[in-house]
Image (tube, rainbow, N blue to C red; front, side, top):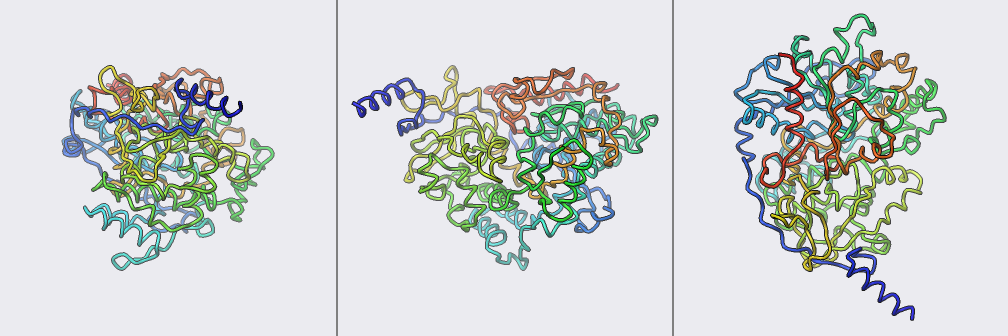
Length: 606
């Protein structure tokens, strides 16, 4: 009787298309649809948009001066039309973009280039976009990454990258000195919010020296934590004198914007900081009883002094600089042969952090977690492997979520959310609970088949907007939930002299934002945020992902209504505002770029 009842339940569940895995079910995805025609090519954009990594000399002082000489320069990814004005002050508008946590300037490489191209193509305007690198990016050794980018051979690229970063072998006479440990970077304690904000002022006064120009056409904003940073900048006063406004942030801009983030009075930050920073301070060795007190803040800084708390945001043997370097390496290996079978993971050494992250990314159920098979046992094309690290339906790490398409090539199953149980474990708990995606997740079910990637514009066609199994009953994803091209995204991971993932995000920024900035002791703690309400007088637009990290906090009332133009973007995940396709109008209309360009058009001075 019990066996028959189980069989009936399984049949009922499968025919109702409620789940694939509840009864051990698997399903084969339907064939991809034909890709859509593109309005223009990437080569056409590159032909007219100049991308240059500007380096602005700004020597560090005090303890920070112990950092390598490269850290005495601020890096800005400057994107402009090749035929546009040479001086930013003569541009029609300029957008300065601040990255989120664990994110470098290349997070804006696709968005910025497309904005510059579209502004001229559709409106005859010459704009600039500046993607800002935080100072700590100076610590990344990208030597082998740049060598691999220059080669057109997959095997050569893989040999260069793996020898250099993972096997301690010299490459062209140079040997990697290793990923830095917290004890090696005492100066990183000074790479906090104050330095990052002062760098914003240095960038704008260097590249656009006339304040009248800045007031007329400079728009400042950011993604994720970059929204909080923008709010900080607007409240900042460099000389601390409220009567002299030439050096006040809000008095140097024409407007502000946020990408899956919000622009807010600083006092509101504690209510939603956890949504943007996927680490609990206690698990970083910073258990404090009174987070709003000056004493607690100073105590946390002492923990950095004595290396009790790590000086960059990492979890030993789980989430490390090596893990953050891996996506760029995987994307570089895939760039010239995206559709051949990947052998990269099979070559990776068995190290605790690599093995842990592989488990996090590719676990079907509790039996699979304990006994395998694991990610190294499956067959993926090279580009599919990149997608598995970031796509919202495969990567369980929500703050990396991007809507890139779907997997095909073999049967798929639903993932059980067994990793959510790790939220109860010490140290890893806060990482899992904050970062773990709540979306429907899928996983490859066969170790024999070669899985390949179906791009976002192959999900739907005409009136058929669903991507289903071959029976047409089980829906894997829908056209409305896919909008970012994996090829555009992969390029941003490696292209040029900087990158997307940030290996050494300073813990000091987390402390400054969570324990000092929102409170009365902020000025006493070195943050001249004396124009705390000035944000209300600046034109603002917020572009919020419908499936991003901010939307739930709006829905439950944690984030209050605002006078800003707040728009919800259906189907967008956390990274999609920067990567939603801009040249697929017959399939998808990008809402981000037109909104930003029109915002600037509406609010710039004549």
